[in-house]
Image (cartoon, rainbow, N blue to C red; front, side, top):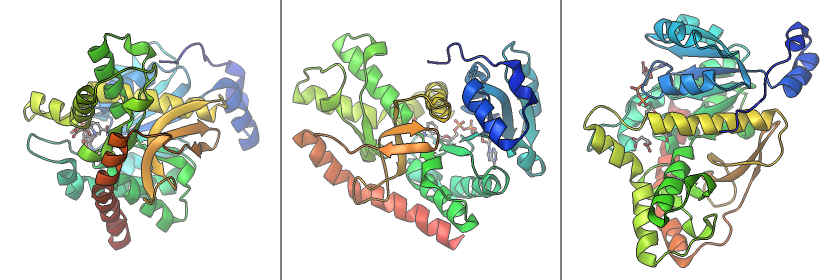
Length: 343
Ligand SMILES: NC(=O)c1ccc[n+]([C@@H]2O[C@H](COP(=O)([O-])OP(=O)(O)OC[C@H]3O[C@@H](n4cnc5c(N)ncnc54)[C@H](O)[C@@H]3O)[C@@H](O)[C@H]2O)c1
Ligand SMILES: O=C(O)C[C@H](O)C(=O)O
């Protein structure tokens, strides 16, 4: 994780005009990050990883319960980020004010036998309410949506921001990094590679068949039989379910998700700081297919989303899976858009 060596010169604390403040941010990488759902299974380890990130000088932990304790605990870790806990609706505005990046893992997780779409009923309303507050209190922040079903919660967030007049597609991201993390891990295990040097783009969405790992574009280039490709693809698509079943009713992926969420959040902050060539996969407003939201490789920069890359050359198998998944992804997107229009 590239958190290395970006510590803060004290001088920036004295700057107060917004131009000076933004110049200072760029020079010193001092960002405020708000984590919504901070007392949860993902929220707690993700809060920990954010506390360790030297690019962050203020870490705001918000939840509907238990954040004072989580914040007190985390605040004793001797890193620069100043931790504050906020609990309940009344404190949400203060938690968000001045944030550069808001990460949303708030909401219920799956139990065995459920699909991510089964979470829609509860999580749609949670994401909507939190995004309304973001539009009001930190409309310029980048927003990382982790809450499932991501295929629908991102269109919901876009709808809220559109209604509020603050929508900028460059600032809204569905976090699909865990799919990339899994594809890297599973490929490395299969081929005896060091996972540190392995990359696999994962495109589409974040649910079952909509998760499309592109093993034909893996780095380093790896020879795989068709049976191996199919096995790795299936395992990546079902990675979340593998964890849900293993946890047997006690939730879904939290630790690996916190790791993935921290990677993506750090990439967003690196982009904001002006670092060049920050490339990640993410689920964003997109024109590379006929669907309005799609996960693919993107470049992050000072404005957030700076470039959406097209899919590149796909194998026949990947083309077939892409064609097959589009209807499901479209349904998930339409459901989110409809919810946004009706609520
Ligand atoms: N994008 C991904 O790859 C990915 C991976 C894993 C989990 N998830 C999703 O992340 C979400 C959270 O998972 P978890 O395991 O952390 O669940 P959890 O139940 O352990 O934690 C969720 C937290 O959200 C809080 N919360 C509920 N309503 C809230 C609100 N209105 N405002 C603020 N906080 C609120 C809860 O109090 C709880 O602390 C789930 O929807 C899960 O499906 C996504
Ligand atoms: O599978 C889930 O429900 C959680 C998450 O989306 C995951 O991929 O682990």
